[in-house]
Image (cartoon, rainbow, N blue to C red):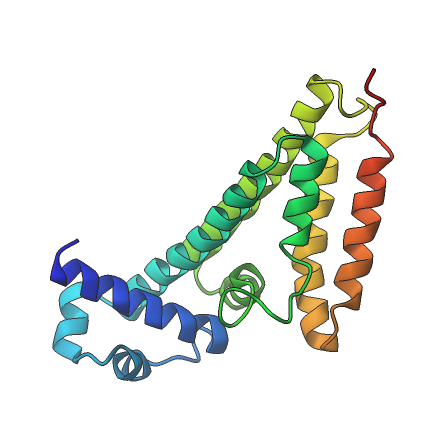
Length: 198
């Protein structure tokens, strides 16, 4: 990575924190310049606009979410272990590994009507997560680990909605208890579809 590319990436990473904590509309270019310790000339040498930076920052944050999910599930062999590990990734929404909390929650309401490009990125991320979880469950059915009574897409959709809704509610209540309840419930439901191995 060249020095110019490194500087661009640094600006994206610093802006991502601000955008995730304060919102895109609530963050000025001057604030980004300050935290990135850069000039307007340098900034506009890398980005045509704040919107271009915002899209790059959202890509960066969603990439971190995607990498974490993939790394987590790849460490496990069974479908149940993979889904349980993915659920455990969200067990403490008050201590997010991404500064400012979950970017899906943070940006979904802000960009719903104002930024179609970012809304599309969020939609793709949600669709990808649901597909990943549904495929894991389907693999569990196919290899005889799980009963075919479970609907992979429905379970994965409820799982994703529960995680993102749980993130928001836990932050409002300043408590992890709702997330703990939701995770336990989904784990118990998934376990109820487990088949006995001979």
